[in-house]
Image (cartoon, rainbow over all chains, first blue to last red; front, side, top):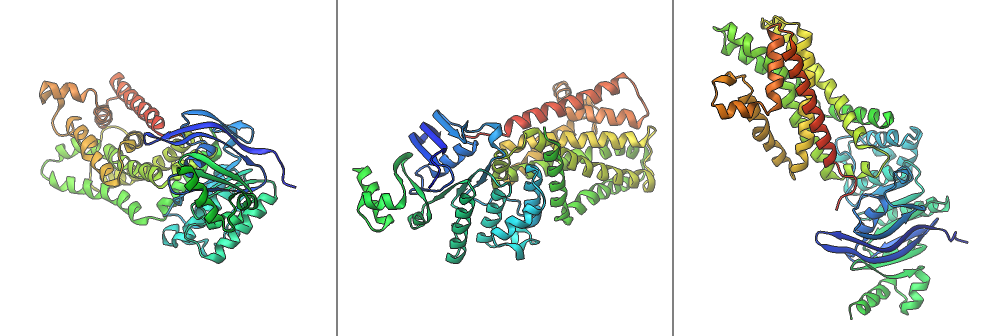
Length: 240
Length: 244
């Protein structure tokens, strides 16, 4: 059975970005030890929610607790792994140099560098400067940097964008292995097709939670076999 | 503060420099080239070369570190690495101190090299101890770094950051007294110069060049250090952990 404890609890969260409410009265929970998919169209507030959870977003009102502490607490910083949408690594450094830096900042042993490089399938590229890698490889360096501290909560903003199907499948397996070890994995995607890989889903629309539940529950609720059709139906309903 | 994070950052900046040997070569050779140029510009006026040579030695690191830091920090801000670091157990001061150590060391090598060439090969004459000139050069490098860090917050692109050099550094070099003694300038400019940190950096170098160790020198150095502290504090304030 899944643990029922919540890794993230958001209560009427409101975040203002660029003069509009990026998150508006957002109430939701994320179960610990699961892979939770954060899905929704572009601009629905997925990245803003990720940024709020990892503590780099100014919050206008409402409450957000992460691993039983208020989001942004200094004590959380060593327990959260964050991968931004753009690969936030040093392009002029090699894969190994990048990861060694983050390992040193977090105070984790050097062998973690080799371990995460293997997990994201970049062993052959370890000594190459990140600037010379392909887009998908660069994204995986960024993912490896998020994994290196063995965080209790992983916030991954579109980690599988631009990857081939084989690699995507392997990464989803990796996310489940990590969640199996007790960590909470939060993955955002605007590709509805990825929803089927998740234990739990949170569907966002215009800064609000549109639906939540397991893929099976959502299929039953919408009466659609295909999750994408189901989501489109829910979004249509929300608009009318 | 965490020594781990400070050391890691300094090592990372060194690694970045090692990956960019052309920049390192430019950092080391451009000041040497310029001071050589100056020597032969004033080939018939060695006294003038002595008068402006020593202060110029100590001001090179200010200019280069200003430029390097503003571009590097801008990159940290725009590529998202700063956001990643701010989500990690890293204090803003850790990041700044890491940069300070790495760039301070580069400035020390740069200032030593140009001093060896100027004093040893080009016959530049300084009455004061040469190691003090190098020391002042390193403190000016940290001053330049602090200003570069602060001003990088106001640039959106690298083009803009580069423009801060003529906008903020050049006026200070023109007004500090290197080219024309300050009491010969229009009164308004003389007053303006009193508010610019490079004026005090220049005065300190000039005094050491003439072997004058007095209270005024102590005052000049204090002002430079205070300006460095203020710019670092302002720079740290622009590194936001939480952004809108």
